[in-house]
Image (cartoon, rainbow, N blue to C red; front, side, top):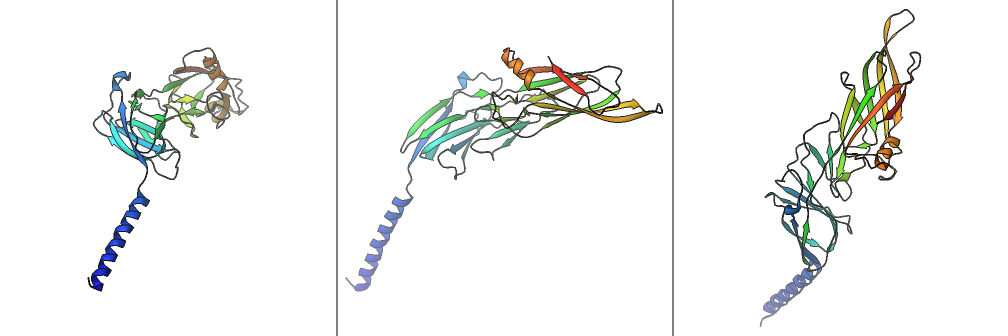
Amino acid sequence: MSINKWLLFLLYIIGVCVACTKEDVVHREEGEITIIPVWENYTGSFRASGIRYYFYNINDHSNFPVVVEDLTGKGVITQVLPVGTYRLVGYNMNTSILNVDATKYLTVVARFSSYPYSVTPLNLCIISSEDILIRNKDVITKEIIPVEVKTKSLELIFRYNENIAINKIRGTLDGAFASINLVNGKAFEDGGDIFFEVDPTSKKAKFRISDVYSPFVFSPLYKSAVLSLTLEVSEKDSDNKTVLKIKTGEVNLEGIIEKIRDNKIPDDNITLYVDINQYYSFEEKVELSVGR
C-alpha cells in the first residue's frame, strides 16, 4: 500500500475515533414522560380547546422551560426531557380575558382586570404538577385531573349622611390580588394597587379578585389590606358660596377579612359596608369604618 493510501487510511481511523468520542460527550441522560389529563374527573363548567405546557427544571435554573402545545383539546402529550426534577404548568389557551405572563420564576402567571367587575367567566383550567422526577431512560405516564380556576368578588357599599354633598369618590385598594399562579390556581402576590371610582347612583364598587391579603395565608409582602379614599365634596365657604374640596380617608380591611375566615363564612363573594364617619367641613381627613 502506498504512503498516500496509508495516510488516508489513518486519517479515516482518526476521524471515526473523534466522531465516537464526540458522540459520547454530547450524549445526555434523559427520560420520556407522557401527560394525560383525566377529563372524566374534571368538574369544570367548560371544556378547553387547546393546552400549553411549561416544563421547568427545578435543578437547573439556567435552562429555559420546555414549552409544548396540544391543539386537539385532549391535552395528551409525550415529551423527552433531560434528567431532573420538573415543575409542570399547564393551562388552556382559549381564555379570552386573561394576560399570561411567562417571565416569572418557575411559573406562569395569569392576570385579569379587577375593576370594573366583569361577569364574563374566566374559562380557565390548569393541568399542573409541583414535582415530576425524570430519571435516565425513564418512560413514565402521569395522569392529572384538570382543575377549573375560579375567582372571588369583593363588593364595597358606601354609606354616609345624605346631607353631605359628595360628588365623587375615588379609591385605591391595596392588598387585593388580581393574578393567579397557574402552578396551583391560587392568588399570585403582586404589587399592583387597584384603582376605582364609586358609582354615584348605587354607591357601590365591585371587584374581581383572586384573593385578599391575609398574614396567615401570604408572605409578608404586604403589611395589610388597605382601602384609601379620595372624596370630592361641595361645601359652603364663608361667603356662602359653593366650593369644591378634596378630603381623604383610609381604613384597614385585614381585620374584617380575618373575621370572615375565622367564622368559616364563605369568602368567594365578599360584601363589605364602608361608612364615612366624623365628617367635618373644616378638616381634610374623614374617618372610615368597615363592617359586614
